[in-house]
Image (cartoon, rainbow, N blue to C red):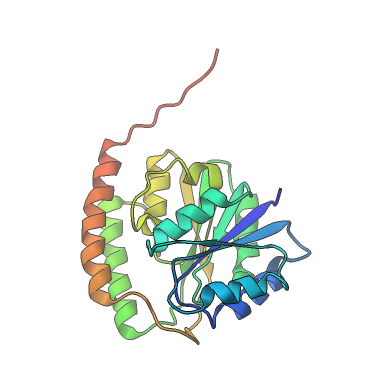
Length: 238
């Protein structure tokens, strides 16, 4: 069984697939026992064919396909379900996360106490448009005030977490943006680790500013309710 599963959700990212897979291999091959699980969210381009062709160069690669488009959180959830590693790293499929930062997250895990189950990438220098940076800054400030999750950047796709804990968390659309709060709700801790961020070089963004705003407000209310209703009880066996 692999030590680590790298889960990558994609929708219409055919030109970003080969270079990102090459970077994952450069960062992990020969250093860690790993697999890569790509989840294609019913792309309308030939992303699935590109992924199938990449299997010849990347024996670590597994490919899942959504029969109907279901969104990023569902893609991540299905990827984690299929993962065989005890720990899972996630990357956005647009190439803006640098796979070379995965060993940094693994090093942070090895140095952390056992109650830390999530290591979240923190994009200290964003390489996005002005509108994206402003909308993310506002969203992070509102989320932090409401949920008190002590996380400066929940929107970063680069994360490392324990698979078993993730599958116990409440599942809902857009849950991937609230993992620090959900992990805290479950009685565990998260740590933010500074990571790099790169401009998109191919394809187009799948999110607009208004999409993030209105969906985010509805999600915040739901997650705040979950946090209020949480109860963590330690159990001992005699």
